[in-house]
Image 1 (cartoon, helix red, strand yellow):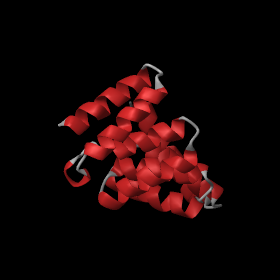
Image 2 (cartoon, helix red, strand yellow):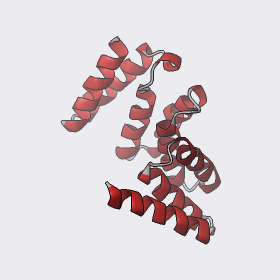
Image 3 (tube, one colour):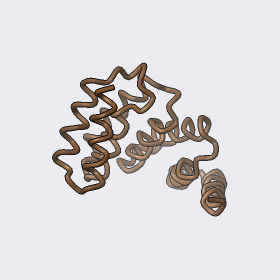
Length: 141
């Protein structure tokens, strides 16, 4: 329970634009969490936080660990794929994003990111299809 509290506090500090305190709380949540039992893995939130802070390389490790421990987490695969895409590791990104889409077919963001990865890989037809699916999902919301 303590890990969940630290995660929630960290997310609040993110919303309040207090990144140093958010990071401290994310680290505490990660240290206290039991990943196999925690559906809200703080490593995913921490990785996404690091990415938004412009610390893309640093974001890789917690996200990779989260995917390794919970390969069926659509969110972990999505966030890891997003970071890999921005690091121009296109084949790895596509693989993660394909898994995210397979695990959560209604996730518009996953479709859009996968479409972007496919387009950058030169897989134009697949990229356009994924982009269309993502845009249709956004219109439906």
